[in-house]
Length: 326
Image (cartoon, rainbow, N blue to C red; front, top):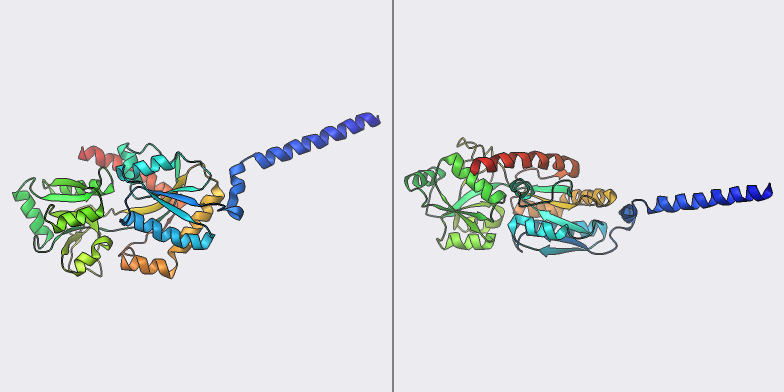
């Protein structure tokens, strides 16, 4: 009897040990958790070159986040495909929460089929910026949006309009403007914002689709002139510049900038990074940067869950838009 009791107790103890081990092993990546994270550098893949709007955004927000979570972010610039190349390489890494993506064209590239990583593979951490587009020209060429449109109608295919990249949000928005305005323009894909600005100054292109932040110095020096903003209401800092809505064009989309992570990354890490990004946005340093770059014209913040839903809707919307354009 004693032997049977001893055997029963031994088996019970062994079973408890096995169950405890299995419990500790299940979801092992979750043990990374917010208590230990980060234990090493966090890599952030950016699909655009240094100095552009998305690159500057990523460097600014992660520098402030690093102070909050006491970690270091390494920025890896990999241009190509409006962020597709960076996404592909980032998704090759482990889903341990140490590889992020700074993106601004996910909905469009996914709708176009160039990005193969859907929302079942990648998860938004948070949207931080919702920028505002403007059509800008070299000072002294066109005095108003009406003059530009009239000239384009009288001279089909002559006006050269540029935006950064191919089959990204910039090109799609430029082509939507061409369609809405009922004109025939020659779309020129620019390799980067800096090259595009130089080409406009040199007269190699006639009009650019660009945000105000990257060109504010040119505008202040009287070299560039915004003709129309892609917005519903006129901007306080540019009261004399009309909007797309005023002209009857349903064009108010702007560049959204955000951080993403592998969908299988530990949820605790995703939550930690989302909270840290929110804190970073609320610092005086970020607010000053946003104001100086005209990034506070719209409310940019959208948390992981809400932005995921918006991306789902945007992908469907851009699939329809791309079908119409083609």
